[in-house]
Length: 248
Image (cartoon, rainbow, N blue to C red; front, side, top):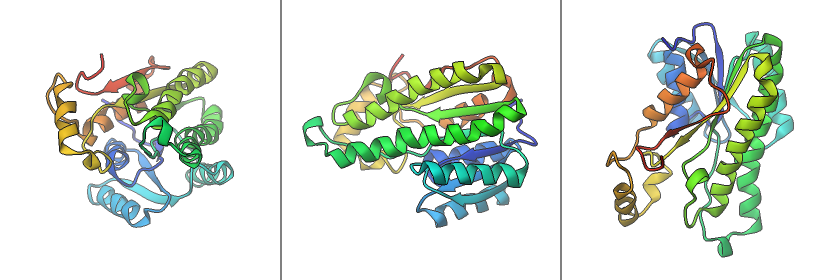
């Protein structure tokens, strides 16, 4: 089950953390994985090397998803080079935390440029190819804070909430073309981003998680793999929560 043999997948922000776990999971299921990066070329190459060492196939391709023209050109080139593009995982994202009154305009702009505009640009470019194939899988990476909010993350939460509406809207637009569009909303996952949270704050967050622990990137990747597979063919417009019960 959940095999992706013969499929080509693009994972934006796929070089580290959750993105790397997703890239490795898709490759492990048989897909050729294009690992996108902006500045982390070395990390992207390490991810590709790890995939190849495990018997998979991958390549690293650098472009900034916040640049719509660059994204469209890069995705078109990927589809042309491989003859297809079946799966898009719009994972690239940034977090800029701060109380609302301390958020700067440039912070808000950057958050929306990468997290929202970048996701839209990637989907717009990928769906062009998927429509011709009459088959495709688009998975957006939202977040638990996009549904329940979190003090000090108003800007970030706004972008992740936007992805929920984007998921449901695009799902309606392209279901007739054989393209499913879903989102995965991780909770408190062990990543570079969460290591910056003070220990006292982590302890309080764990109290709110019924399973009593943080999640692993591999657990998020497993959810993405399912939504990218043929087995999820009757699921579209949904948000799959991977949060240990923190939000039900």
